[in-house]
Image 1 (cartoon, rainbow, N blue to C red):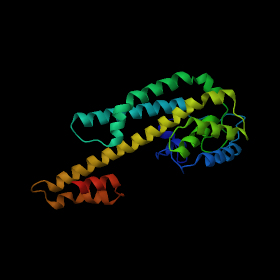
Image 2: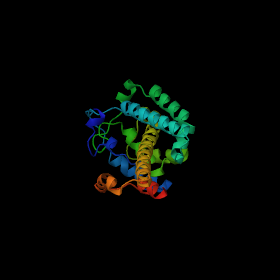
Image 3: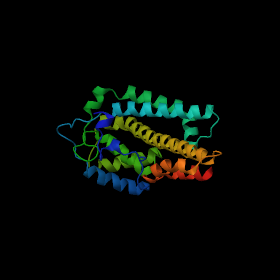
Image 4: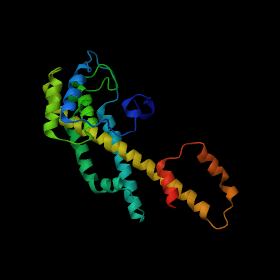
Length: 236
């Protein structure tokens, strides 16, 4: 499966951050119990794009975002706080990606129980478990809360030793996925700001005939303006 093969409804088709309603520790335990009841394991594995391939894609996107942010800073342009964070912490992200590649070899990955249905059908059950944890904690990691969550899950559906060992790895995979989605938003925001600056420069250019801008205005009228574009244009 390539990026072009991703269809609506597929987990990789969504570009929104991995974020859902924020749960308390008690509510998270309740969710783990209901989640365990709703996650049957497949007897025959559905063929899907592996997490390793998605990780490789995410690594490329994050590297591209880091390079673009570095270029912005080198050019003396202001960057958003998220870009500053990426510039300061990219070496840590890169190290985590390397560790995941080492700690989750393809042979071990194939042995993990896979989900039978739902948006993560064909993917390791432990991946679905950690995805829900990250989403409902807003990526906040608390070892004790994670332990309680896993214990609650296993009151309904025991996890294998291999799955428990893979919790830390899949947690990092989900967090890296989240970073990739935030990087995508950052990249789109950068493009919107550049478009807004370009339009503002043409509007303010001496001797610029307003009629010359009509095609550009018509183009923009055909699609909803992003908040970033509108804010940058107003700022100019």
